[in-house]
Image 1: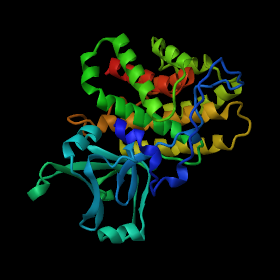
Image 2: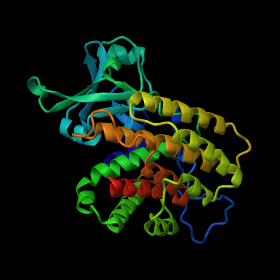
Image 3: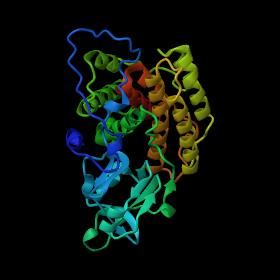
Length: 362
């Protein structure tokens, strides 16, 4: 994973070129900065240029991997008139994704791409697409994803370019997936050791952000390592009341959180309703000129949407796990920990709180 992140700034992809922006490295701080930003640990969404997807010769399909890295020998091909993606390193791909490939935004196969693999132009709806074995001839050991909506659990779009902080949520999903995947054995060995788990996840998250050209200051690193996770994250109203947000902004986020909390998610259809609900709130808040700190508010709402999606997908996609009814139906504590962690200490604290609480309660 390190190699694919380290080289991501050198390559542009067709699907998300409109969502990328140039990055300026943070200057090394010699003295504490003078700032009026109440949430300095949350970067602007425009600074995050990681491409979220799996890259093929025909462009980038959104998912929880770095699109710049053409991973697992991914190749786009024609499967009975449908676009498909075959992984030469099938075991690695299956270990990373599990049972379903999460296509998090509708994907348009334009005329040129369709012609190159011998299919008709088509739009592939966002959703969870089954990953299955290819067991014929020389393809033994490979895996394939056929983008047939009839076989998918359609979810609707997760990606929302109308929210200028949308990339904050994307950053969470990629960081959480990479850390859980790349440190599977180490985290298993630390089972029951809360302090050890928090330390490991914090160190890996800090390293991940640095590789994504979002370096964490020494002060923020110290705060993340000392983050107090002994909180009732499920009482999100109380946690929001403790935040640095103004009373006006607290009211704005609680309106979204209350609506989201009353929307149970046990199926992909439920998830689609949830995404539609939160996206509508995102679009409204993106135009709200009365917010005192729109960056923080829009970031917290983005993380709510992405984190809820991520952990639902993680539940249904885990090998040997549920066949379609994940627990819990209500928003779990680790999603609220993710959101509150973001306000406490930025993207690193968000990942640390979410992953640590998840591993502690599962």
